[in-house]
Length: 591
Image 1 (tube, helix red, strand yellow):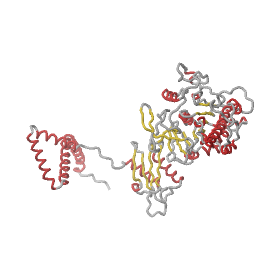
Image 2 (tube, helix red, strand yellow; image 1 turned 135 degrees about the vertical axis):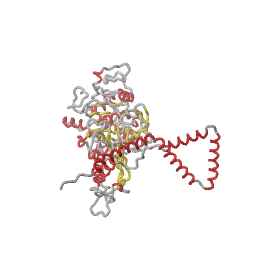
Image 3 (cartoon, rainbow, N blue to C red; image 1 turned 180 degrees about the vertical axis):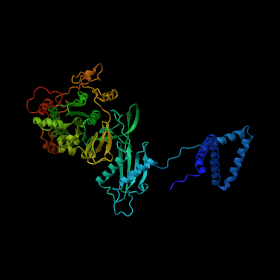
């Protein structure tokens, strides 16, 4: 059946109707633009009238008469003033225009993009927060997300920066595996590349996810405001610790939240273990600790990598030795064990006699070991004892003797650490990129944040004893002899180094802070050589070699006769390996 054409009046009139609507719309827009000031003033007058009426209604009846009389008096005064009515009219119009101006609408809820993200998060959480036999589930496919998301905030890109989730009471929030699944899901759905903090309120069945700001990396090495026995490992989030400290951050001074590690006779975490990947900043942290320890004590540095990262410390006041070779490292650690024994015996005898502790045992002694596992491989190949075996006495009795041990190593060498090292290093730090399982293997528990794949050097986590896991950023403490070091950071480290015991010491020809000495770029790139052997401090008299198992018995017995002492030269000879030695070894790792 053929279609009949539309009537002529309908087919020809649609175009004219459309043109009429366009003309009317254009005229209305033009009139609105022309009359916009008048519309604004009228809107303002209406708002002023509404506000005045509400205020009049809110005024008690006994006060309306005086207020009306005061208003009439003001109107009369304005009418009698020259040009008063004109000024009053202009003032009212100005107030009306200000009151009636167009304001940016206040955002009261999420937009379409943010609503879509919240809906996606809700649907993703349904399999984890729901069970089949729940009569009124909080989470269900196609359910209402507004019932479970109590508070939320978004950044400029539409990604959530804060989210509060209410979950059912039957969810197993007490199990670490269940919490980890939820945290990984929220991390993936909210956007990768950022670090999230998760706070579980198990009593109220609520989870708060917050995006953490990156820790500042511009804080360099400096004298921190600490008491003797306190060492700043780095800085963490504001509010994570109970104290702040003033620091120089570039050209300004501000307050930061430090991670303070306390050592001494009354501390509960006397030794520190730092683990990380190559280039993660473990050497930087050890160098920062050394600069702080030199302020109140003596240090003994053993470097297993042999890269000369601690050459700037050689020959400085308070630096007993900097060892890179296996022979020197074994001799230095054997001396540290004997020094720990001597301090224990001297302190106990002074206590038994009712005398204060001698001055030569009250000054703290720090034993810093960088990658002892590398020296362990060399010792095993050469048939010598593992350097970690010589750490048993300093680790077990170091707190009472004022001896602190700090070790740094890499993740691939964790299985080579002895049981004594694992047991007595209760202060731990993990630097660089690491998985949650790797962090848990070192710190004992998983962090409440999501580690990112890429982090700057010196960024990681720290845990002191049984305390919480804290984010950590180590202050920039580079090797001042490294060409890649900036001038500001190099000068900051040089300012903290103590003076040399002998300014003309040939062991450090590259010391740029000695007046009158210049170095060219070619020699500045070479690390300075270090001493191949160790010598005990000349001010200390030391006992002969004592087996480790007799230390505790000797301390308890505390014989009344004076302690037998021997010259320093004889003790130094006793600490050397029994086999004959050849020429002094160079300052590099053997093998």
